[in-house]
Image 1: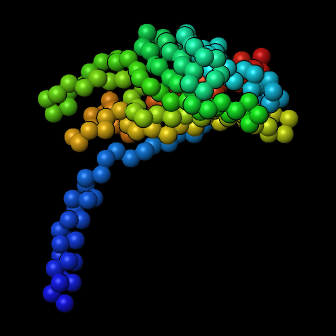
Image 2 (image 1 turned 90 degrees about the vertical axis):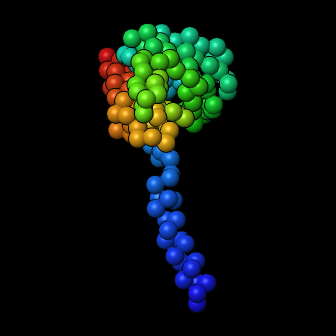
Length: 189
């Protein structure tokens, strides 16, 4: 009985350490849009890994190598001259879907965390993976853009507002929404 009580007491003492020692949680954003066009037309607008600047208003240029082959890369240039380097991980024309990761980003500033300066990336996220999928919805098309990622700061100190969960989610939601809404406008012209 003493051994059981001792084990229980030890577990209770360690519980706060376990609860507060976990790192940042994986976040997820999913946005979609219904477009009044057939699925082939919509897929043709988004399928090329090197052409996102043609339909996303925040991206002024895409410099890409490798086409739609797995391992292809692209560097996106944003309106503020920040850059995002991405790599194509999967491309399936038959399923009208592709998946890519952010490999690296330029910094748009710095923030002081506990007396140490940390870069603020162009998009305040880390370990970002995203999927774009087009599917038929009757005679319309549905485009879904989904991402899984962590906030920009994954260290052990309290995260600053510039790199916290809310800022990361809001940034990705804004990027997805503006891109999907503009894609709809461009295709339905």
